[in-house]
Every structure is written in structure tokens, then in C-alpha cells.
Length: 151
Image (cartoon, rainbow, N blue to C red; front, side):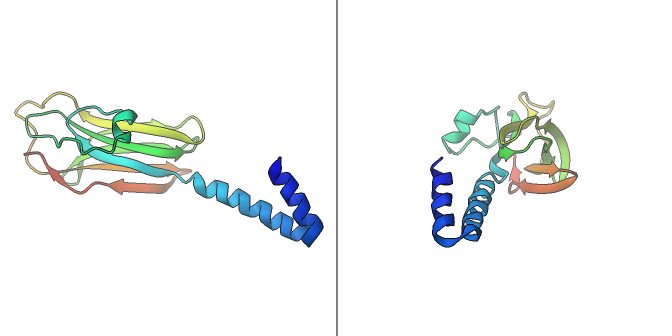
């Protein structure tokens, strides 16, 4: 309501083109605030939840004989987005998970990995978590962690 009153005052004082420009700027600012973003990404030794990730604490790195779970937390996903997470070993996907977003401006926490220990332990190598967000067939966000060895 206050915005409309302000736009009316601007239109009366400076002409309608300034009011329209102000209205478009406000819409642009709202769209910029809702940019789809990876809030948190990593690999740890347990399933995580948003409450734990909000604490911004350093999570334990998996070991060769512990569970290993990749996670990605995405903010402002749009209806129809495809959020995909891969746990990779030396660049090759070991496990993945996909979430098709059903509502606009949604937060998505996606995880892939093992909550148990693979027989014989995790193979040696460099592990990463990789999140890809696809909208209308185009990649809009892609982020990958630095490689981590499971010692």
C-alpha cells in the first residue's frame, strides 16, 4: 500500500515515467533477492539437517571406515527446477540423488552417500560433492567442493 502511495506521489510530482521506472526497479530488486543459490555443500560422516547446517560448524570429514554422505542445500529453487547431487570419486559419480522442485522459492536439502561403511571401506582417492541445478534444460547453478581424501 505504501509503495503505491509513493508511486502516485512520484507520478504527480515528476511525471508517470519516473513512477513506472521506480516500480520496475522495485520488481527487479525483488527478483534479485530470490536468486537460486547453493547455501551449503560438503561431505561428512552422517546425514545432516538444515538446523545443523545453519550453525555453520565444521562437520567431520569421512574416513575410509566411516559413513560418507554428500549434501547440498539450495535456496530459492523454482518450480520445475531439477536439483542433482553427486558424490564423486576422482571425478566419477559413485552415488547421486535428484529432486524435482514442486513449488517456487523453495529450499532444498539433498543428500547422497552411504550411512553405513562399504565392504572393505571406502576406496582411496579424492571425493567431492557436486550440485547442479537445471531450469528449462539449462544449467543455472553448478558448484563442487574441493577434493577430500577419506583417510
